Image (cartoon, rainbow, N blue to C red; front, side, top):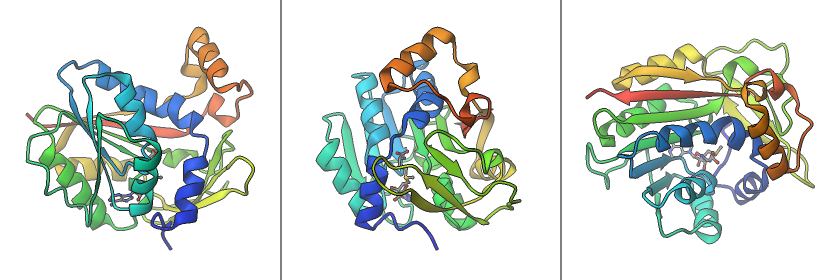
Length: 254
Ligand SMILES: C[S@@+](CC[C@H](N)C(=O)[O-])C[C@H]1O[C@@H](n2cnc3c(N)ncnc32)[C@H](O)[C@@H]1O
């Protein structure tokens, strides 16, 4: 069984989730890549959900125009109700089709916590091939997902899978998100190994594939103090030494 992103309760609970770790150890690394290339203007946020990433990107810089797409109407309703922004264009998509976008037209694509939701290899391949089509040659796709090598660790805001369980590609894997003043939101995700991500990206045509796996210990003391103040949090869980996420940077060949 997949997570029903089209269900209201799932969308509402996911919106209430504190994505502090995703921000500190995920999104900020994506934003650094965006900021490093002043020719990046148009950004595709594929699987934007309630718009938390799209909104952060738009607020990073005035030059960014974000096309934020999702297949869940509920998620897009939350996004447009709560995170409408003049630099974001939210769009409903079906069957991974980005027909409204021309080939070679996008400066960068981000794909955050989307691949783990998909159980079908063909579906994932189609998604990445469509993203490849719309990207300009030489431009990056950034994929951020739960770290397949971090199953069972107790992170401050979530746990990814069962401790001690051995997963193979395509296996069901539950993700337990801690929701303030509520029971855990259990997401029915799928396990995909790092090898699988690399193979899928290569098959779609991407090259120069790089991986990042940051943890709290990698952050400078001054920066960490800044985050601790921002989130009013200083007691770190396993994210102190184990990277909760993987980030892939892959380039469309020029
Ligand atoms: C875990 S949420 C992540 C939302 C957002 N990227 C974030 O990081 O906050 C996953 C989102 O991906 C969407 N999604 C999953 N598979 C998709 C697909 N094949 N096409 C479009 N959207 C998809 C779901 O509807 C859901 O809104």
